[in-house]
Image 1 (cartoon, helix red, strand yellow):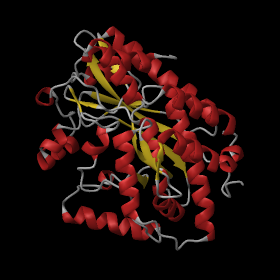
Image 2 (cartoon, helix red, strand yellow):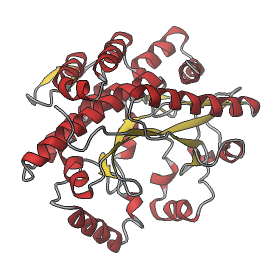
Image 3 (cartoon, helix red, strand yellow):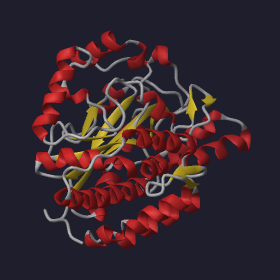
Image 4 (cartoon, one colour):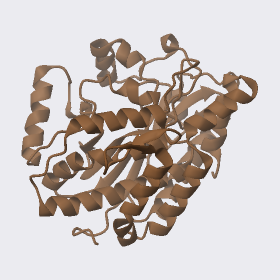
Length: 366
């Protein structure tokens, strides 16, 4: 099967924590780091303890992987010179909310005033994948339809088991922190881009959010580029996992794009999507996930394998089948990031070992 609009380009926005290389604690030094980085590829985040890297859009996963690796290499070299470490993960276990500062931007300062503790506790980082769809009406409909297929993607990314030095019991505690925003969660069905924009304007008019960029659905039509944007995933320590998620997301988008062209009236029930997402945040790869087809619990590894197999026609059409199936097998074999972090802590009982693992994995391959 082929995508009627041709090959879907994919790009990634990747968020990173900044830690002190000596103490391994989060530090508010994004300003120092960004001064040494290309302004067109790196930007500030809500809090000064994080930075964002932006890939180019690419038609192949191999090109995307090279770009992501190059961005990490550039950032890590700059951080080394400043005595800083760079960690790609949903959370890092050592940090003090009271010491973190909002980035110097009027929008962020307004968010701090409006949302208070919710803003101060955004010590989280995510991976956003963009899949190109130029028609805004189709982008809106596809963003709604992909909801049931997000839980295995979240499980693959789960890298935030710790929060302020404590084990939360979740693979992706970042998901729970993020869910507190008033516009988070799965996206409802809209019949057109105009209907979607009317909803966004209505929310801005309420004063609860200040601009369209604060629409934080799990998947949304991007506010600034012609893409469908996956926002549910944690930051991933390993580039291979980002490439795997990007390949699977592109295949889901391609499949649902074809389905939209056949049936524009289909509506996804949101309650099962919310439940499956919560389960993925809780269990990651190691526990049970809700099978997107059957709606029943199955081992996480089995759900991932079934998802890859179900998407094979679209993976093959994009030239991704060999790479994605190989990366999926490797991800299942090594286990999720949350489990790897717990094993690191269990060896000596030191949270600094968890941070060291994240720093090493983020650096690997660069």
